[in-house]
Length: 337
Image 1 (cartoon, helix red, strand yellow):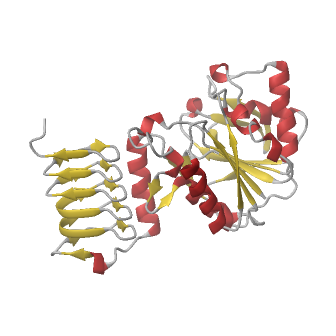
Image 2 (cartoon, one colour; image 1 turned 180 degrees about the vertical axis):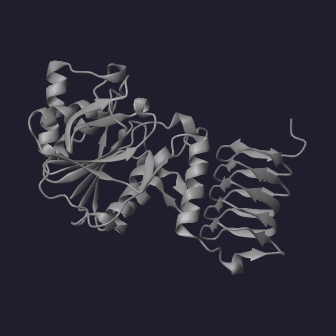
Image 3 (cartoon, one colour; image 1 turned 120 degrees about the horizontal axis):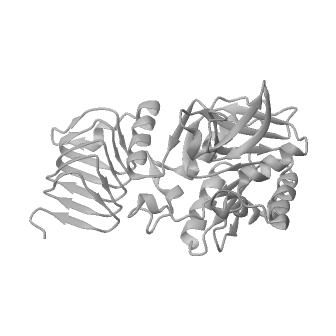
């Protein structure tokens, strides 16, 4: 079983935190988005993951590859890397992995997180597409049905033809068939929304060739594409996983209002932390009041009151009150211009 994970985008809507770290590698309560995806599929799939194929941007360095290799190793899989030099749509991103597109596999985009039930039924289908009911499907691809049968896939419909949004997860019995469908789009210059090659159109091509499509649902679909969405997703995961901070790393009469996540080596000295705060590995919070916020790894927050904030990796915040969003290695202090 292969996982093909396109992640070449720069994550502009979560800047400044994606300036250095690709968005799918940002931690969410101790695990990167990519690791959470791999971890989920390692549990729910009927067969083990053997290979993770990552579609990277041209400027992603060795550190990114090393981290992704470590993620795969933890779940007994081998990491493979391909590069998407120019963004020309979701189908184009997947096609960059053409040399790995054979056999059984899943295509999953690394900009959302999800919860799904184990023991998936993949039998009798050529493709299984995961969907979620939404009130406004105009921002998504949708599955269109006649009765129980999926008859068409449409990217970002302009009229209400379905409320079953495609969430960017597809299992294929034979990835080679998907590659053939994408190649058809290229050969016939079939572009969709944004004049780009859309994966929805490739799957719709397979559907029109009488391939058997089934759908599956997720119990939770979590967006990580913007700063507010990343904060909201962190809240959901904190409540879902029920992290209990290690009392040995909470000192100075600090008060914890759960849910709160403390990463490896993170400490809280004095103040009030929570609810809905993630303090990532090696970060320190000193005599501060923090709620609904993320403090990334090795950052330090002192004598501050923060809410709805993101503090970048190795950043330093002293004496600040309010809402803050600063990137890695930044400094904010009371009285600074």
